[in-house]
Image 1 (cartoon, rainbow, N blue to C red):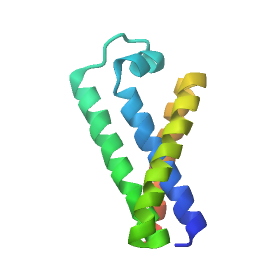
Image 2 (cartoon, rainbow, N blue to C red):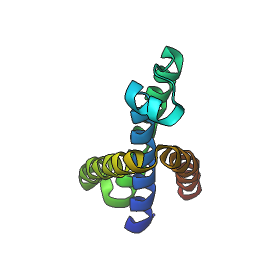
Image 3 (tube, rainbow, N blue to C red):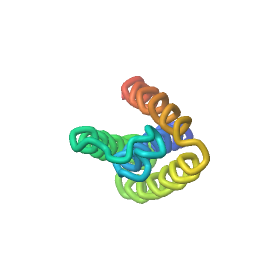
Length: 115
């Protein structure tokens, strides 16, 4: 996996993870669904999914740059993914959810392909 592929996979996974974590919050869940309160089970599931996607973003970072630089790159991709998620959710929350739902399996499939 070269550094460009690692960057794309890490950013996609970080964006999807941050979007899942955002929609686990009442405020952003209301933006997405119109429901004022998020059910506890759905909130926990989104938090777990977001955490796993953020952890999965470490794999392409370490694969692309090695362990020492990869961890630093992973933190940078998490920050970039959070920025993209914030901007996209503020502009179009439903499209952000759709993009995250599409990018997460594609990035995971890409990781499996290059493993």
